[in-house]
Image (cartoon, rainbow, N blue to C red; front, side, top):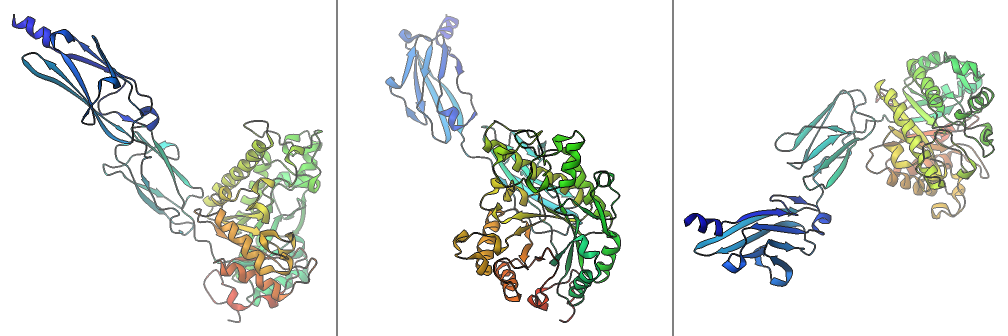
Length: 528
């Protein structure tokens, strides 16, 4: 008798659509269908269920009760912890009670890091710590599973500061995800320099002009061309491909030039014009390597600048990286890339072999070119950083406002170089640009407006800036006042690094005062 009574009043429950201690996203909580199957449910015998949600009894119209159980389709639920409870009345016995507690979580998991980190010396070990939310479903650092202690703390150790940002990703139990970057910029030395072509260094009068500026304390660095705008390699290179394509025109011995300049207390920057390279483009077209060049729509070499090589091609990249590595072996302190971009103009008139695009639209092609420019700098940067040498990139002035026009996305580039060298020459701006009426006649105003835009676009990267300064005349005569105005505009924005540009390597020493120049060893420049 008692067994029959027990069988009649025993309640077995099976729930589908929700689990106890579940973690749901808002999307999941917006489309719940809950079924509670109740075995031995006998409504006529007085075994009746009552449903409660968050402590409130649900009215009869909100759910359906049948001989087999309850069906409930709740309205979309808010974020927070929720409790679904059911009470089943039984004759002569206490109510049978069941509870399911679950959370609706729309909040991404917490990743707490400081970015950018304080600048670190380029070749010293660094350590970075942070915390993440406890109880994550997964936590990865640069795509690899990472361990955290019971408090969610993690620590990263590096032999030297990595060039590229470190990507942290986390997923909580509800499926919410979060990502964060750790950026560890390096301490970029104070740099005040001048551009020197290979031919100028090989020509006694111009070399003496450069050395006079060094000896007078007008500069703390000298930039020497490794490969120039004409694709000419102007020093004693051992890179076979440079000789094979006829690009070598030796004007100087690189190691000797570096030794002389360093003996005078200045740093040496090796400038490499990357993808504007007529000799390589011509050789490639004549040797069945058309994938090395940007083509026109007829399959020929794009005529811009006498030939523009293809940033997406691994062999083209390697040629440039080989030149950089050789320059580092011979003592340069930095590699500064120029023409690390595509040609300006309509991208629909350009064909980039091997370029991986998401669709056939011009916008997708522009994004793919941008990505390849950034990935090239990441690739070269790994080698450069391993050698404890700085990497910079010269960017067109329009890159901050219209990166797709030339393939130079400032945020991505900033995260893969140690410094950006924006070319903000006042003579190159149209009237009204950045709301400056006459940029060429207002060098301070246009540099201040355009450089501040670059700084905004690079925010959070920790990248340094090294301003290219116009020391030549186009349309308006430029002398000490105009040159100094550009330097002062940058200084007022916190940028004290600059490089004077004059293609003829004839500079204006009177534009520079001793207090503008800081030697790499911290010593006073001559004359101070």
